[in-house]
Length: 503
Image (cartoon, rainbow, N blue to C red; front, side, top):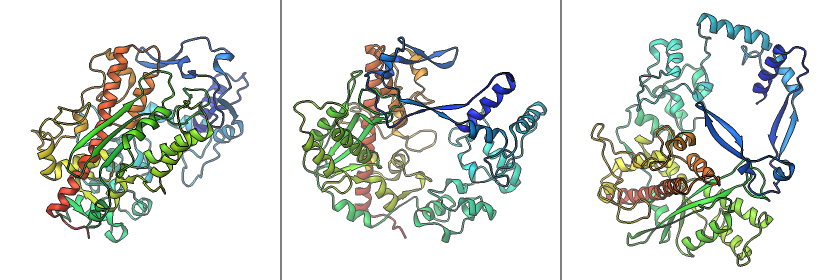
């Protein structure tokens, strides 16, 4: 932000030397609650001539805007330092540790001559945005990442060789690069933890097994109490609060999915989604979730999100940010949340932590996310093929769908998330494009769900559009918890039938 405002300030001063330009950053004040409902309804995101814009839906009077939730921060001192070339380590960042006049002249010269600025390779390259996915070739795009590394390393860089950046949770990347180690196969194994060693040895062909399971996973599973409840929440933390009494970035829980697995293998499914615009969802979310989970059985989550959200909602209950319904027993609900969160007597079990400690498949690469583990377990064994290569006989929004399908071209089992239909298949495609949910118009991550539900909070949306988005959200969230069920089923089958040990 400081670099951005410094550049804008410099340009404006150069264009208008007779002006006095004083820079500020306008920032959201997280400590101040809004005192009006529907503040977000004043602003509508629209598309004009291929560009996203914001239009006002009503006159923003002081009464309608309510208590200010933005603050103007004077950054003149910081901006003047950046424009003068300060604030940078000349050894670590020589190009930017110089006055902005010099930088602009140098960059303009590169543009005019068509030359490329020399690139210093380093850990910063891991976040390079100019990379292509080898699994999805695109003739119209080149990999700037491979271009830079190829120009610097010559034949020593092979785009098909796993890079050290692909190692899961690396701590020594800078050290490896400084020693000339950039390929995964060249990293000394004694410098990796056991999870990283598995990935490196599989990816480089030094270990032929595709899948390894720790013996301790069986002990973890044996400690669970049936019925098992697999939960996933969808939430939003809007910068502009939707409801009076809430501060910027406070959580709203608008959806959950829960699959229940009984000891005899019976699977049932519950779900809930807040569809009405302008209605505070958190109280009903908690009530419905408590009904779904009952008072028996182990509750499972994937990652820290559900634990964090329940604690956030508990804070809102204690603070009374919104009036609770008269029949809501707040104290009992707080006790129930405490029992489910970390330290409680029924604390949710994190399956992501189990993956990190006890399970790895070659197809997961450097990721432990459920989007990486699900395709791996579907590829790994016959049990999930037996269960899901026919239309689903249970569930809600996914019932009747076949989720185990093999790609005839690659021979790989297809990712079930890729089998979900487009979100906006029955409504105006302009809305589909405007939502910018995903490049292939599918809901594939929690961020997309957040954007979709936030759009449902617009009172200007038609019923057909609202229903179409709701259907897509329900399918996506249901698949998240079914994925957890599938992972559990695969683990049980592998432990029953034997597996390669994790040394």
